[in-house]
Image 1 (tube, rainbow, N blue to C red):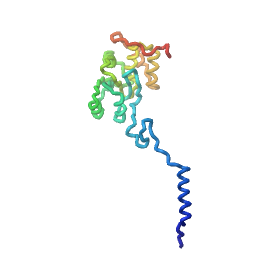
Image 2: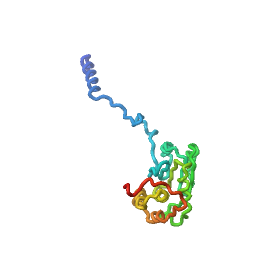
Image 3: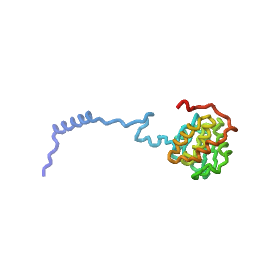
Image 4: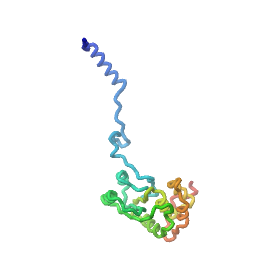
Length: 209
C-alpha cells in the first residue's frame, strides 16, 4: 500500500483553511463574573448565603442554621453577634469560625417541636429582643434550624416593637413559613407583650403597601 505524502500545495491550502477556520470560529474568551473573576475557577470565590437568609433591618439578618459553605458569605456581613435559637451544642467548626472572626454567640435553647412556643416563657423572647435592640451587638444574625418558626416568631415580635400592624407581621411570617405556617406561632406573636421594650420608629406601615 502506498501512502501519498501531503504536497506543499495541499499543506498551504490546509494551512489557509485553518486560518479561515480561526477567523470564522474564533476562540471565545473565558466568561468572567461581574468582579472580573474567571468563571471556570470561581467556585471558591462564590458567596453562598444560609437557607432562608434575608435582611430584617439595617444590621439585622435572619436565616436557617449556617454551615461551613456559608462562612465566606457571613464574613461579608461583618457580624458582631449571632443569636442561635436551637438547644443543640453549636458545631465545633462553627465555633472556630466565630472565634476567628470575633463574633459573639448568644444561644437560647428553644425546642423545635411542632408547637415550639406553647411552653416557652415570654421572658426568653424578651431577652432575645433586648440583644437585637442593643446596637452594640449589630450586625447580628438570628437563626434557628430552618429560619422559619422560631426565627419567624422572634422577628414577628421585633416587628411589633417597630410598630408594624399585625397583618403585615403575619404576611412576613407566612412568607418564610409557607405551608408550614403555624397558628400557634401567630397567636404567640399577637399576644406577646412589648410594653417593657423600647418602641422603635416604624420602618414600614400598612398604608405603604
